[in-house]
Amino acid sequence: MPASVQIFASGKDLQSQPIARRSFFRCSIVQMSWNNGSTELLIVVQADVDKTNQSYYGESKLNYLTRDGSHDGLVPLHWFN
Image (cartoon, rainbow, N blue to C red):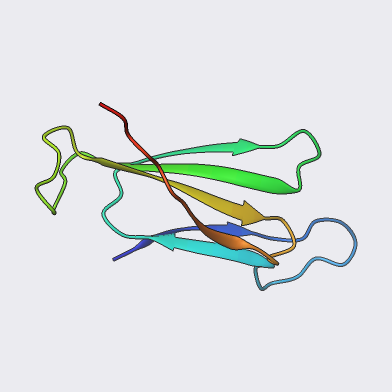
């Protein structure tokens, strides 16, 4: 079952549906960081095991999500040797 991060509106006009959402597969640890204006969220998703067998140390992915749901996606991570 996938994990997910969902953002809901707050205030007088509360909504029962999320205004932004991102789902993750192979997830054991999640760290989230808002920007100073609380309009954008960076989400680091880590798994203990790399199912692709490319890394002994598991896998990490960086995701980006805006509070209004207008942008979401995976941020490419480039590892240099």
